Length: 413
Image 1 (tube, rainbow, N blue to C red):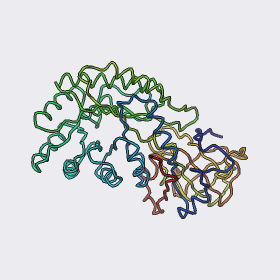
Image 2 (cartoon, rainbow, N blue to C red):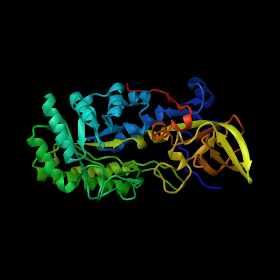
Image 3 (cartoon, rainbow, N blue to C red):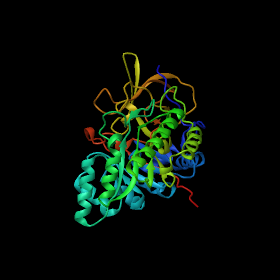
Image 4 (cartoon, helix red, strand yellow):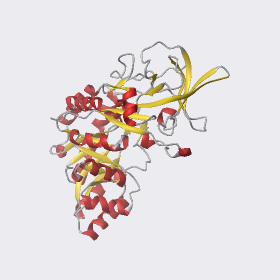
């Protein structure tokens, strides 16, 4: 038997799983079938409230739409956050369609094509520049179409978030301009007459150590102050990146966001004079929506092979790649999983939950202890609100895509 991560507290209540107060059979009936991603909007609203309560008031909250671009969820996020960060023209279009004003959208990511740059400039979206070459292309496009582009400089700092799951900075990286050249690029942008919007400094993601995040934020603020002094210009905005992680695996503990906020308050109080009028932002995706999602998939076969029990389900890694251990995980570890109608029953057996794909890596849970499940029962896989449907190879082998449903609407009154 292998351990699995913790079920989020708001789901681990009662004998039968509910999402947003609704039963699983009712949600499946409303959606039409399994496999199904169900997202609890009340959990997302509570997470946003926790962020606001913990952070200093001058820190804005941006939603990184890459985590979950499901249209109803994105539209529900718009009135709750201060901006949306995108990483493609497709995501930019989704953010606009969700109702976010272009002036509150920023566009990061290497390899932006000419038409993507032009579309962003025409809309008034801020481009987070990843290189000097991209800056020159954006300036040339702005001159050609007669629009002053909004340009920020993404900086590749010399540091990273200690213990982060995915390192986005430090050393040679395809992301951002090395910090030693960033001030020169700022001067070039300003001299060319562009609308310089500030810095984007993203050092890593999926960190659970509050002290490590606070340490990185302090280094980021110091770096922004130094670069502003070198460039001779104060940045309107410094995007501090994100990095807030969620507890996927056994032994993981939730991030103490109150510690992050308290330390950031001290950091900003002591910031350099060049940053006195600067606004700050934190961009979050996974931390806002990841724990609010559940992937529901039905058992279609129960079989035994060489003494091991397999629950074969109608979903799989083509919908939830990360849970299979094939999306940035070196060692396969189990996400939390449950039999939906026997949530708090004691385990009867050790089973592996496997998908319907013709590959041995399509394994959603490996040798976990669960109550007995039969054909027709629904298996719930938690931590499914971020990097699920759109981060998985849904076209693989021609199986249908997963359904999605947003449960509940935010109360913004």
